[in-house]
Length: 330
Image (cartoon, rainbow, N blue to C red; front, side, top):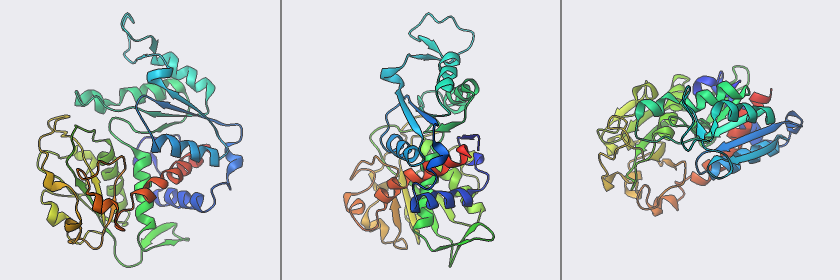
């Protein structure tokens, strides 16, 4: 693996999940892999789980880490080519990324979208130029369009919480009875949020569905359709109650409109996940990437119930990062 931006960078999905779960069982067995290696973590936006889990994963592999918060520690970056740098941008990404590549063996970058210009955000200009100029393997810690470490974590959590058999000969996960029904459900929020997490989760679940691991449904109000490339193969439903029927996992997440880019076109409080709604499911496990606004996105009664696996899910962020780092090191 030379980079980790999306599920398309993963050659063998089942193998990566299995490696992550092996790391969870024996966290320090591969410490020699990272000896004398350095991981640079570059943040243009806030982070809690991504930052701590990736640092922990690096430590487990014997990798040194350096963390750079660009907003306070670095210079404002210019990403456009052929411009006179007479504004507030003090350093061009050509030099900044190249210098970081001199100091680190692997680089990881986190940057949120502006939610003002879909074409600009979805071009992933910053990530592409960062990769081009640093000349080192690059991991996405969340971009304008995707959050692959979170989505790998989500798949690991689903595999752990369902009855699968890992066939050693085929090197595949096989559901022992039926495939679980996984539902991605939109929820209300007080502010416009990016599509990165739902885009990424949908993309990974569609790949998992192709591999025979899950049945995948996306439910949201009309006007909140994700960009089609991320949901190919998914069932799209506008009736949340119908979508939740017999669900085994419910992944709750808000996102702003892609069609009316960055806008809140509906904020119906009836879309919040409650215990009453869970009664229509197959005793579904509830997932969320965190942070979550209680009693707005998910009711506190759900989050505090045995149905919630959000803390376990967050804990698995370490093993997802460790699995990716191991493949890059190898």
